Amino acid sequence: MKIKDIYNREKNINIGKYLISWDEPSCSKFQTSVKNFLYPYFKNGVVTEEFKIPSSRLRCDFLHWGRRLAIEAHGRQHDDYVEHFAGSRSGFLAAWKRDSQKRDWIENIMKFQLILIYEKDMPYLSRQWFIDEYDIDII
Image 1 (tube, rainbow, N blue to C red):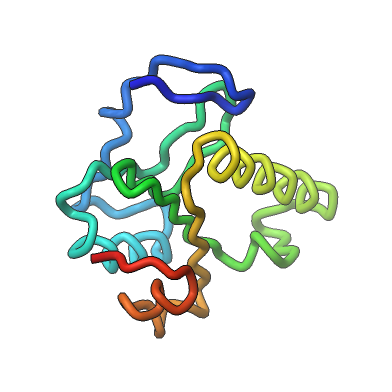
Image 2 (tube, rainbow, N blue to C red):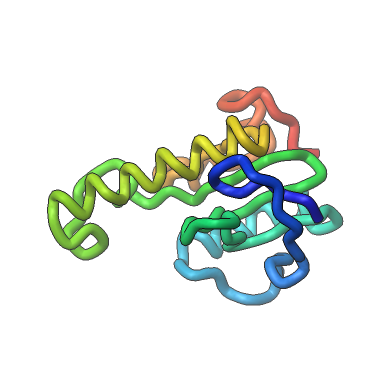
């Protein structure tokens, strides 16, 4: 499949190795919870998990290729300094820059809609939540 890389250059990428395995746990409990929620809605689509953005080390949690949706399970380390993840304040700033690069690739290069799901959203996660927050019906 022809996909643009992080620098907007076209690459030929086999997305097959990134196709989601709905029965396997994800890299975190929170991401697994998001995956379990998405399953009934996305199970018949072309969905990848931990897709590596070409020409980078960045990964996208979930990409639904048919609907052009990118879903990121954002733990609090994305918005707040958490020493365990960042290591230092400069590490936090570097992570913030990587998130910005990923957002640019998703929204501006690939033209996917980005959906951020935070742990605080989990009790409210529903079809209606997607409509209210992002104006998307996931059915």
